[in-house]
Image 1 (cartoon, rainbow, N blue to C red):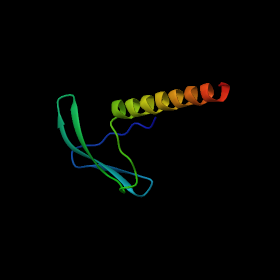
Image 2: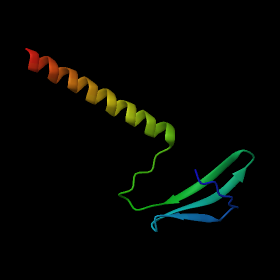
Image 3: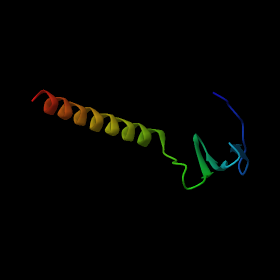
Image 4: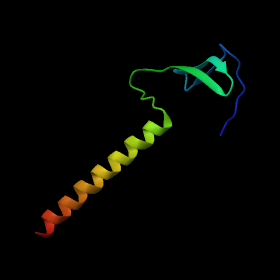
Length: 72
């Protein structure tokens, strides 16, 4: 993991087309802004994990149904 120090209104660039800017710092909370192309999905980590789990469950459920159909 790369750790960088940034102050309010300072930014980092990722892959030439994603810019992350520190908008505000209040105590332990940091507000960031993300400028990225529309085709680049941006999620909070907890939401991303929920999506991945839901996708895994859907694949597992479909896989079990397909196996049941195959076996009769």
